[in-house]
Image (cartoon, rainbow, N blue to C red; front, side, top):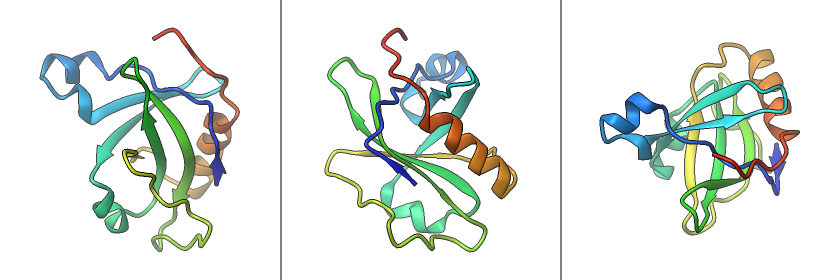
Length: 120
């Protein structure tokens, strides 16, 4: 698990914005330049997810989001006792496209090392 991130979100996919659903999706870009698509979920639904990467993000004044924590939930569900509590106002996002534990580990490493990106 990685906390105290300086990783900033990018825009939602154009198709989601055009459909009025931009608030539901965000791209986050890793150090490699790869973009990862995350879906916003209600925080109370998090326990229902398996095999995902999670970002807890705080809203920024300019409408972007800053990651506070990035971690994985494995095939068996949440098992990390160090998982951060969601801060008031945080948004919770999940990445559903990392198929294996190794894929999730690599994506988290990529996202964790990403510098602050000020341009959208």
